[in-house]
Image 1 (tube, chains in turn red, cyan, green):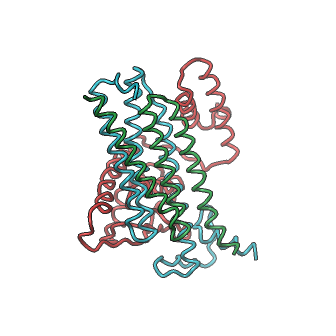
Image 2 (cartoon, chains in turn green, blue, yellow):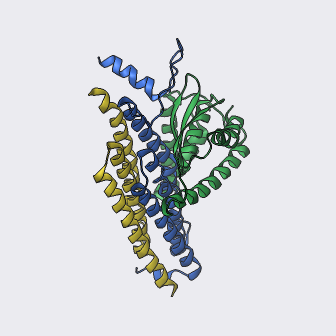
Image 3 (spheres, helix red, strand yellow):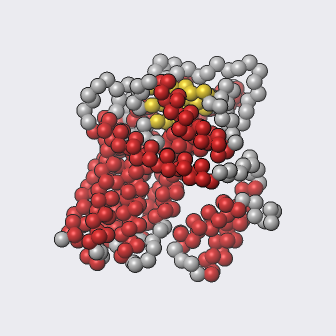
Length: 162
Length: 140
Length: 93
């Protein structure tokens, strides 16, 4: 079982993508899609990705909701910055944020979350002293951003991945 | 325009609103490319189009075709998945490339790379700075 | 009434998206630096994907969906390759 189905979640996701792409649910497409999905998952095995397990799917779901709300809110904020004439002196800048998390998948998820949110951008990660460089479009208080990243995202990601 | 006539009002109205919202957000993001001052500010702007802009248009498309063909049309989800996976990757790559270029030119606006710790082993997936500088070493 | 509303809003959305593409093309042509051009190209690809989706809604044909998917894929590959090139191209100099 373990040998034939190394990544069960990924295999199912690939099969669903294949079915969506072909747009049909006939037995032929399901069989072909399963063969392709299993083959692709086994091909991934040769890359030997670091092992992880999705702990606490409920926490992951809650994090997804938080991220979704944050994306909608910051879409609005960035649209206001672009469209309205500048009323106050807006300043953008870099913030270096020390991280506690070392899990590679957690760091990757944090990078994707930060970059996908308008107004913040993950620029660089330094593995030697475990810090990241963040660029913020509307930078008011650097300490506040360190707190936001740590409390809102890093704490939950540690809970999920470590 | 031939098929739009078959659409009932309860579906046509949300489709129109979602389309306008998505297109408006995409235009706002692209306007940001013109209005914002520096590259690091401009790179924030297209995220509007790639997050909420395209999801609104995809939702409109899913709603429209599902009602029109009276079955669930979900293949737009493929583009949504693709966008979720690819947007952060491209933006991070671009930001890293810009940072590297600015640093190698000695630009004052970007922060310097953190000082390397003495005799620390280079972990895989380290900062681009260390990876690139080893490449320089190999070439010279 | 609602049919007309839908067709007009599709037209308006297409005009907005075309304007957005024009902004991206401006950034692509004017620079000032290479990373600005790549950013403009990336935005152009995303806007083109959305424009193709609105064409699909306008004609009621799902054929446009596939071209939108291909454009989105090409955009990712092109931007990733160009960003990599920006990092390495400087090293060779």
